[in-house]
Image: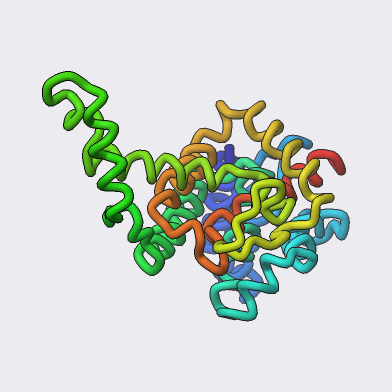
Length: 267
């Protein structure tokens, strides 16, 4: 929790001093610096103070997601197609990493989670999977065959256009959970039509697994982050899994969790 009590006391004290002294020393800028200096957040290793953070060079680990992004082929692929999009994805990764690495106020956590969800919604709107709503002649024939296996009209209840769409959505969801397409270039289940590539170096995989383990280990404290990640996975199922850039809303999530794993090992 933020050290609000100390901040409030400092704010009140400086206000009293400001009223009594008209000297230019006591300005609004001085007041703001005083309050910010007292505002701290709790982290795994103790209190996180913004002024101390800027003074300690060892805390430069905050830019870890940026450094790891430089060695990702996915970063380069997105940057080649859309520079602004690549920068936004890296910024989201840094924000999510900060969310996992420190106990920010709830309002900040909600804001970061909302940004992740909006990013995913934009992807779905721009690259919606048309296969979810379109049924080919082969699929219609397959539905008719499956319906004949049920007595009376139960076949129409268990196998219809809506259930087929749900199966496709389920397929997309589990495709998004497939580690192979992120760390192994789709091997051993190659998808030539999807143009899979090694999105992240294989060395990132143990860091990602360890970071995910640490995240689940503190699921009670990271409810907002976990809920946002699950929503992105579900909403991302409506996007086209064969898009040339991949499901890029997952990029900041994987990068942030991998960076979190490195940080936990370092800490």
